[in-house]
Length: 359
Image: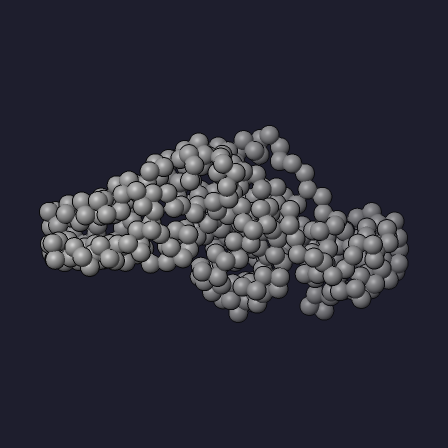
C-alpha cells in the first residue's frame, strides 16, 4: 500500500500512549462517537481515568486527537488517522467466503465490461457505506467495424467493434430526417476510414477524411457522422475512459455530513467534477497499489473532509488499465475496506483478461 507521509512518528509514542491512541481510533471508527477516559478504562486499559486523561492530553498536544463539539471525549484528527493507518492498523487477508462472494458478484454481472464495473462499484458502495468509484479501462485497441442503427424516432445507436473483441454501444440523437440508407452510408464510410486505427488516431484523421469526402457523401449521412462522433470529444485526452459512481446516497448516512449541509453540498459538487476526480484516481495508477487520502490530503475533497481509498486494476498482461475506489466519511472501516478494494481490483483484472483478452 502507498500512503502520504505522516508528520508524527510512532516512535514519539510510548507503549501506554500507543495503546490508548489505538483504542481511541478503533472505538471512534466503530461508533462514530468521541471516546472518553471512562470508556477506555471499561475497555480494558489498566489505568485510572485520570492517568488516561493525562495521556489523552499528550496525544492532543501532538495533534493526533481533538475534542469534538465540547464533549469530554476525544476523536482522532486527520493527522491521527494517518498515523494509525500507516503504523498501527492491522489488516488481514479476506476469508475464502469473502473472496468467493466478490468473485461471484463480478462474474454474475454479464458479458459487458461496463456492467461488470458498475456491479463492482455498487458492491464497494454497499460494503463501505460510501460511494463506489470505478474508472473504466483505458482502451485504445484498433477498430474493426462501425455500425449506426436506428432504435427509435429520436435515438440512434453507434456500435464500435474493436479488434480485441471489445464492443461499445453509444446512444445519440440523430439529425432530423435521417433515413436507413443514410445510416448505412455513414456506417460504411466510418468502417472504411477507421478500420485498423485506434480512436485517438481516428479522431485526428477523421476530420481530414470528412473534409475531402463530404461532397461525395449524402448530406444527411455527413451530418449524421458529425453528430454521432461529437461525443468523442475528450476521448483522446482522457485515454478513452469514463467514471462510474454508485451509492452517492450512502454518503448521507454519515450523521456529521447530514448535519452539515454545506459539507454535503461540497462533497456532491466534487463528485460531479469528473475530470479532476479522474486525475486524482490516476495517482493509484502511478503508485501501482492501494492509496489512501484523508481529508485535506486530497485537494478535491478537502472542504468536505472525506476520505478516498483507491487501487489500480490490471489486465492479464499486468498492464494497469483502470482504477477502483471508495469515497466516504473519514470514519471508514479502513482495516476491512482496504483488503476488499485490493482484492476486487485483482478480481476485475482476472475477469477482464478472461472475457476480453488484452485491452
